[in-house]
Image (tube, rainbow, N blue to C red; front, side, top):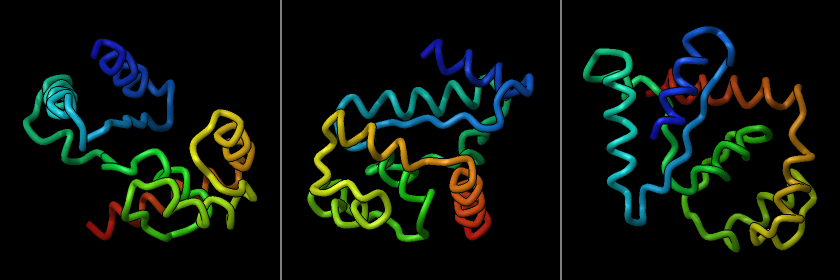
Length: 128
């Protein structure tokens, strides 16, 4: 949990443009998710700071990665269900989350589509 406080301090000091926190909210210990939100609130000294942060639920990692290319919303965490989406935008066939596949997906992220992802996420937040 201390790593989170460190990242938040760096963010507040302008060292990073964004801090992304990925949490598995479906499996125990999902209580840690609530602990992280509590720490964010404590750090900022208000009760609802964590509510102002974009927090993705599962499938969190693939959701934020997919935002680099599309507005489509991933609704199920099953890799087999999302494999066609991954293939469509990255060329990685039969995505199962293997290290070589993850590396290949990460190679598809560029400075340009990072900016597109930021805009898509901002639109999601604005629509809230």
